[in-house]
Length: 374
Image (cartoon, rainbow, N blue to C red):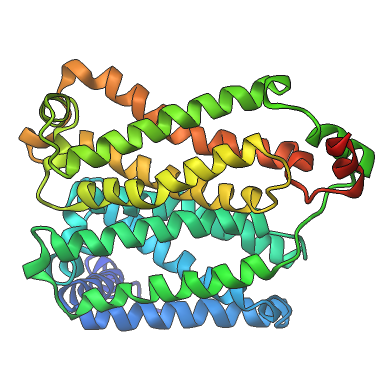
């Protein structure tokens, strides 16, 4: 027996029912931040469960794997926020950003979301892959640690002292785990064993017996770090309202973004002044005198921190969300880009040098001590 054909007008309407239901559900989620948050928690729990059952629980022997899974989920959310704020997509996180964290709509907020959604997400995937293959991820982890800590510290302090301090809501407390988790993760990363190079004591002694003028690459790096340290001190004086004419001219004609009342650029320059500047001085010391075994690890931490900070600072200075009086003038774009790119490049070169030729930074051997006494 042949069934009657479904009328043509009825078929589309039947197909439209689930489509309309999905659209209404998505709209309801977008209009309810609580429902959106619960949906995100459920999706994250489902993701962790799938990974657990597929891997048989072997990946979860390292607790940092769980941390990277959770943070990779938030990285995707940050990427969605940044794309939505720049107008590439719409209808996903608008209610949450508008009602919960309006400071994410600033140029700085958009830039840190881009960094988290692209660079941090890539680092999470690489570190999770290394855990799955039982390989060391210590160097990647230290770079990530510095990047995340710089991002969240500048973001939180800028929100507390900037123009958005009066708009803080309870959702601001959601950022506190971003301080506690990296601190705990950093302790575990530093406790992981280092991958020691296979170098003979004689080769270590030969490398550590060279003076600075016998190491032209290190000499150039020291010169770059000296210039970077001087620039760090100068910009610190600028944001501290130094009355010198050079500071006044710089903040109005070269980097007016430093005057932006959002507070992020001022906090960034003060962190540079009080924390990064001493590290530059210690790095120069470590390049001159051998045996500073702490330098390779901390160079990675500061390389990640300054890479993130400079990306956010450069992007915010040129972004359309920054009010026009605080945007970088077009006639100084090239000098502004050159100085800030070189500023970011110095720590990366330092970390690369420490990883490529670590013999100079290994603890002094008896052979090298005897060579020095001779």
